[in-house]
Length: 329
Image: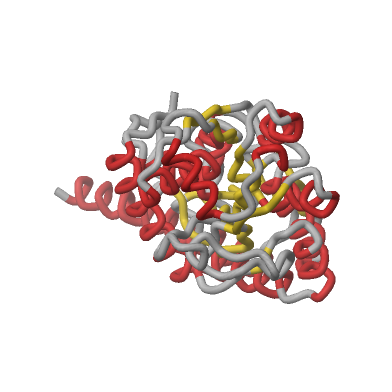
């Protein structure tokens, strides 16, 4: 009896010691965070709006934390490869995902994924957003959203619109436009915005809902005509361009947005420290100026703000996908 009691006591002491040691280690790690480079994983290639955002924010975040912040591009599968990599990373705050509207669209598609975007990642902070801009080739001969709608109604399935790929924000911006305007423009997917905009510039495909960062230079040069921005409010970088909502499709709104997320089990103290650091970086005049020059607006906010934003955006895309029948492949 005595030997059994001693053995049980020893096991309990061992469990207590392990728990106490782990708790002490975790607290110490939280207090010293960050003490090594932080990695921002981007699911899109170099030069994309996600990549541009990440590099501008990473530079300033590194200054805030006095630590290197590295951008790691892992493009493919509409950001699912990058997302899965971060979900499976050590939950210590040193590997973060540059999440985006692509993630909520993927969730809304209803396809089986090797992770749950809503539960396998912890929110850190919203960082930026940018509208898509509805652009047309000048040869199309339309100067407003209403003129485009009239042409599309007169010629169903005649007008093609380009996008950066199936299931992307530009693709679903077009699907929402078709649905709300009661028209039938045909979607032509490409492998990225640069390839899509190239064919729009040549006139091969006359219409595109292009990320602002991709379209602005061509709008300014006159090689593309901007009809409207897809965001709820006008864009600060092109303030004279009407929104689609102002142009007659009441309630129309889409945008490309980016955020930072961490593996789900990351300690709350570290998540809060990251949130504070990100918001500090975003308030920098230098960061705001650099992002604005790319047509990108600063967001920021609490971790709770991001959680609510993700939930609302996922529900929005899920509803649109069901109504439009949009396919990922």
